[in-house]
Image (cartoon, rainbow, N blue to C red; front, side, top):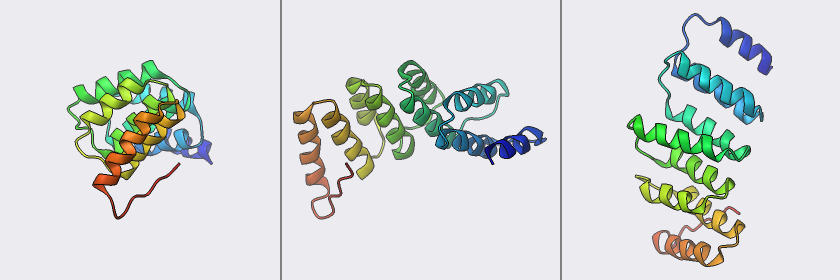
Length: 156
């Protein structure tokens, strides 16, 4: 089915940011990391505007294959493009940095997020815990408890 989707995508006379992001998401979600990264490069060569969904898909791919350098370049490009770091892309950044083992950049990305949700906090808690930083994980858990005392949800 993915091949058929790509065939249709390839013959589309006009591709917009939504069609590019949909194709990126299909590749990324099916675990086709190389294809995701290649399509993203192709998107850039075509001069297509990169939306938040496209950034999040490619960041997720970078996380899956522990491609820290690629993820950092995307983070830089995101900032240069003038995007604010909201929950959707910010959570993808956090996940990428933690999966690549870079706790410092994950923390920096968390601090630069314009808004955070429970997923953001849980990503910080789980990321620190998985890498053996129990005190940091506990610190974020306590902070989350202060922010959401009646609705704390932990997704481990």
